[in-house]
Image 1 (tube, helix red, strand yellow):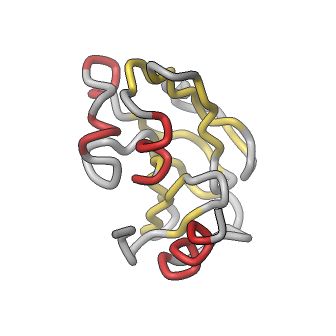
Image 2 (cartoon, rainbow, N blue to C red; image 1 turned 90 degrees about the vertical axis):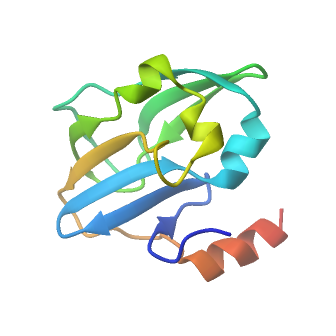
Amino acid sequence: MNPDDRLYTKEHEWVKIKGNTAVVGITDYAQKELTDIVYVELPQKGIEVDAGDPLCTVESVKNASDVFSPVTGKVIDVNDDLEEEPELINSDPYGKGWIAKLEIKEEPKGLMNAQEYEEYLKSL
């Protein structure tokens, strides 16, 4: 269900780390809770965020939700495709629906692997 090659937060973000680059998105659980995503306010390239800081906002037909950065780092790329097709987060949250790439500045802490995240979801 949730890919094993990522780490997860209790706020339902995922991060895929390769070297010192982190790709960030929201989980399948989060996109289902939001329902139809209609707009994504992408972060600005070059901004620095601490783990747990708001990274961007995702708006759905139900409400708007902040997406929090799972890592401390600098935004080096954003998924511009989401400006025209925000529904990519609904249809492919772990692939084409990624939100941003960050250059990691600190070792990530407090993240769950896929199995831990699955267990966490059962407690909700």
